Length: 125
Image (cartoon, rainbow, N blue to C red; front, side):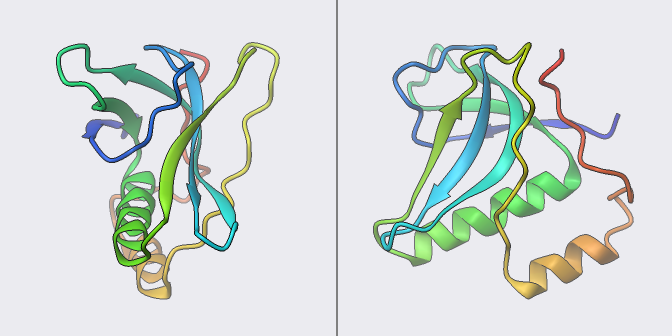
């Protein structure tokens, strides 16, 4: 409930990722800092447009991805990429570690479109 399917064109898809795999979406800065933006997301690759992928995301996850995309654009050498779960049926989802700018945190806290529960994942779908 509350998920939307969005297309992302700027995520570096690792070669071993295929449609319906479960992945984390991560951000790596040039200094080596690396954070999880989205955890345990089932990915759908666009077969017609190489590099495009679709994710089902909550409102909070949309805001986190938007903030990370801006971070990547503003920091040369920053990469947003996938990390595949080799055995999603037995692996526990990672914990989101990305901390967006304070203005995004405030927006998340104030948004009427965000429920107070944990973000939904679709790894079990």
